[in-house]
Length: 306
Image (tube, rainbow, N blue to C red; front, side, top):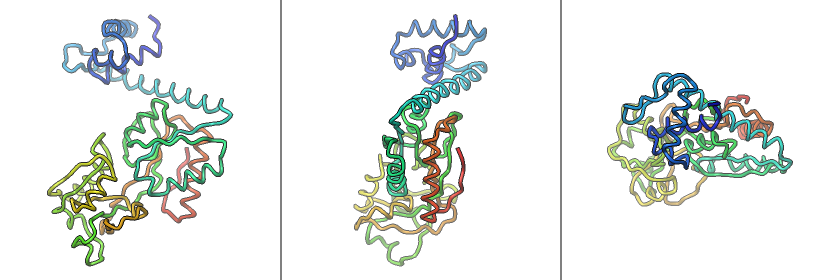
């Protein structure tokens, strides 16, 4: 058997699903042919990739090694396809993934400036979590993502654009609003803490929980919700409080008050993610534009290059 890319896709599906039946369903094929393809791949490599007596299915040491490199190779074929398609298009498209909270910060200005400077590049915007962005990058569905989670992936390059201060969102009339002073996380542990998004994890919710844990604090009650707007609605209804990025002050509401946090290093990063090998001109234009805007707005940041 001559090893082809499809064999790597078969192997990766089985490795990730830890089950031949689920992997076959994911690949839209029958299970017996998939099992034969994996057996033939093992024969070609001269080693066993799966410990078949384990439940769920486990990779052998050789399988772990092969999985890491198969992932990288498949990701690079996606990179190559996406970059070649972009070069070949007269009217180019850049697909952008973003988490909702970035819309209350600099992202709208970035989009407007980019469209003004590069009108021949069509922008295709997709709201998705950071983890969904990483998956979409590797599958070639987006070209760049803006998120908040520092998640390591061998096939994705992450650039921390800035560290955004966090603040507390509380209902209007809350006792903590009376003094007009910043609050500490210790002041908030007896409140119902509303975190978002509920799934997939890890997410911004885990950043908030980590901020409490780092200070040896445990909120007495936690309520998980699907997204930011639900959290704000519940806060307005006096159902709890939340820790949110400071850019949410741009979202004007008369039933929610934003309080500064008197905490060092209480920040949430804004992260730009791209495929590891993608150094396209379009992405370099975008990154340079972001830094220009940060300079104009006097936003603290450290410059990196693709």
